[in-house]
Length: 197
Ligand SMILES: C[S@@+](CC[C@H](N)C(=O)[O-])C[C@H]1O[C@@H](n2cnc3c(N)ncnc32)[C@H](O)[C@@H]1O
Image 1 (cartoon, rainbow, N blue to C red):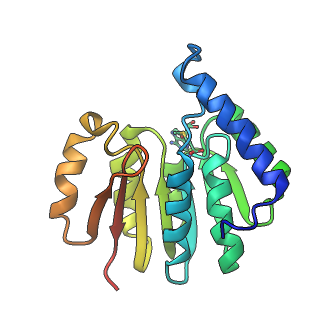
Image 2 (tube, protein in one colour):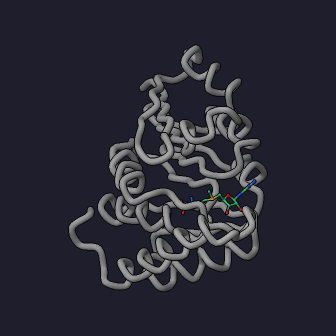
């Protein structure tokens, strides 16, 4: 998956990584910052997605499409597709540009809208990556649990960096007998939940 990244994708990754790094130091308002996952998290998610059973792949919070590029590598390797949801029009436009420039429009579908509403329409999800605002983490998780296939995987980012904002959710997860879960200290901390099956 990681050995044949196209020059176009590498260039788009470089551009977005530089912009994300600038955002973190130049006072860019929170809503405009890209807040991307680091490359190692992207690789980790791609490996997880590639190991899921048959079913759909979804991402909540596209940003500028950086994480979708990593997941697209698993799409390519496995002949699968990803749907990524983004609320902000501005970010959705950037993500569309990323899909076009990186040449992954056939693997990744961008849907602009509120992921909570959009996820209602889904069934048969095998992989989900949650990377939007902390306030919708628990509702997205609950909604997805009823829409996952056996053996499906739900991941959420920032569970170490922002653990103080999701204390109740994080306290509940280890007790939730519907999933097996672990927090992986990679990047900002990724919660991995797997449904039995
Ligand atoms: C941390 S950024 C995503 C970064 C991206 N996953 C990456 O690593 O490249 C979070 C994004 O979630 C979006 N977002 C917030 N609430 C949302 C919602 N209800 N539905 C869809 N997207 C949402 C924000 O606009 C923002 O672009």
